[in-house]
Image (cartoon, rainbow, N blue to C red; front, side, top):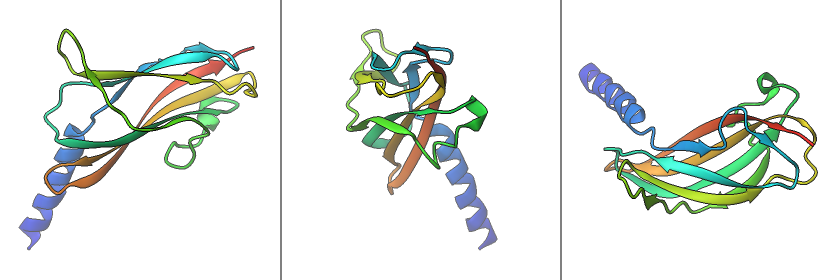
Length: 143
């Protein structure tokens, strides 16, 4: 029984490592945003061996005094700018998939550092099992 438990833990850890299925192409760390600005967010899925049934994504921005003051995305996302399906298109030169989504920075945002978060949910593997992941960029909201 101990071997089975160890094998399950090892398989879960390996699946989690392989299942890092998305990247935030834009915005990137250091991007300066303005209240009311429309931005094109790029969500990227590199080539992956993981079998993942897409459920959806959420894009959010959470303003805070310093990036260290921002709560973990698992605790609080802030202002949700998009929540819905993710239907990526293949890159023309290979190398994975992507989707661009236009969102608007809330007009009531104050000038402050913020964390821009991409949240992704998919169903992973043959089981399948739910897999939730986050990608962040430290941005600055400036007037």
